[in-house]
Image (tube, rainbow, N blue to C red; front, top):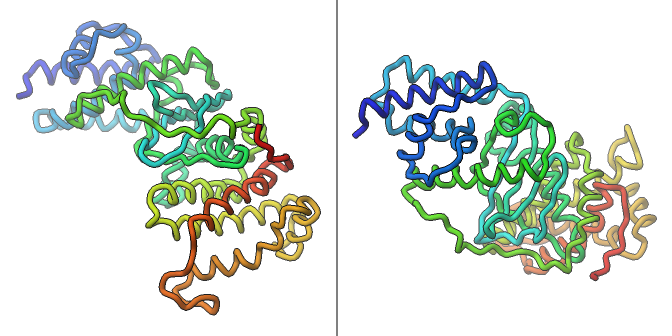
Length: 377
């Protein structure tokens, strides 16, 4: 049963957030703090943390569902206005968590002023600073299937495509937390202090969400798979990140396809053909990125890109594989083709894993314009 006190405190917390939206200051309301702690069965936490706008906002979202039938129309309307005000800011932090069951993750922390990939209580998280435009890009563009934003593609690509003789598999949960940057800091870049603050907020948000899902355990016993340290070159990861053009649609699309291909392949072998399709589409994108690095304002020509690749990678055999890759792609994309009439085209796991690792050197060059020697330490 919801008491009249619940409704009064709900309205009080609504007013606290509205005051923050108008003045940029959170009132130190001990009654509101005590109410949040009691209702969510939280441990005692300091004032600054529990009264952070994002904590109060997520608390209101949780309680709104429980209290909906008891709230008057005016309060419901005011609550709806909070949602609009929440997404009226120009800069956001996106916090992304990952699936422990299928991924193979980057083993080190990776930090830049715009992003932070860290491991907290054995769980990897990705934080990226993003603009309102990028956050809503998929919706504004009409793509209801969009699930990843530009800064996430850039950061994940920098970590995965820079490995030596291997790659990472990032299986993203499709429930990111978006927080107005002003809720966390008045600066426009990340720092160790800000990351530590976010870790504390994540802990409370997990408690809120766990209670709402009727699962009160913090699953610290969950174990993630991390790629072996020997494959990682952090300097190379930063190099790729620095040279990644986040405003280039072709680079973004190509990187997205390779990231998704790895995710599909390691989800289940039943998605093996889908993984190969994304791989071959990504390979075409890789060729096009390379072509446009050398030929601006020209139509893409496969023979020209062959010459470019032969000059840059004379011993890697990339150009010789174009025909076989093309045939394999046709087999997968079309239900009937001149290359294979079987209902189930013949492919092996090595067709994906070996080719994926082999192409990374070419992909690294496409993104960064840099050729590296792939030698394990």
